[in-house]
Image (cartoon, rainbow, N blue to C red; front, top):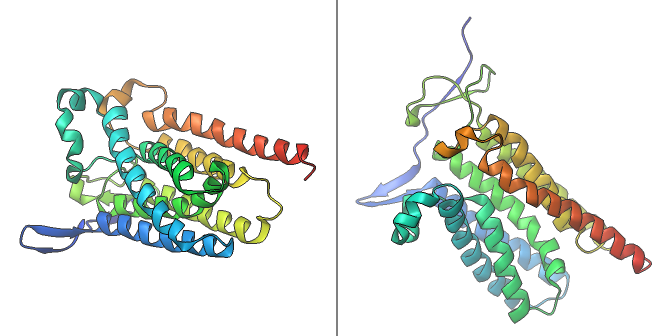
Length: 267
């Protein structure tokens, strides 16, 4: 029986001029920051917060997400190599970013932004920031797709992708698309809840819903994803799943706290 398949041989480069190449992955990162800025700007205007705050938070988030994602990759997925070659942690152009590390970096950056720049609470800011972050997560997974990386195990499903650029000859789950679609749905749900329900939802609910939805989706997709590091082959759960569990618990905790706090205040 012939197996239906999709041959995927996309170039990771949009175009090249001499030694300089513009890559899809970089474009999607830039698009994430641009659209994230526009979303936060509109949210702040709606809530009578100075647009200058959007400028500041963009800088904090950019530094936090990239630094966190890089350190996360180095510490979680290839610790032995980078502890022996610490200077290469700075070689971000060689690739290697971890979304869990990026999430931690964003939280740290938001904490410092709130302390130094904002009169709003950390959780209030987090409730709003998770909206553009979920959209950014979608774009980053599309960048992974264009790089033919972070794909799944072999499959005979008709939408299996043969990642030719990686030397694959059999169709595999396009887990980048699975995750990306989950994050896009999350973005739509968060945006709808913010626009329609923000006056009734307790503070912290959107942040909790984001963490629960995103990392549950990540946890489930990891079951059909190729291990990113050799050491994961002997683990009952891979590193992506292990790191997702605390985020899922935190998401539940945020939602419970939000409703309990609302109840105490008589909301």
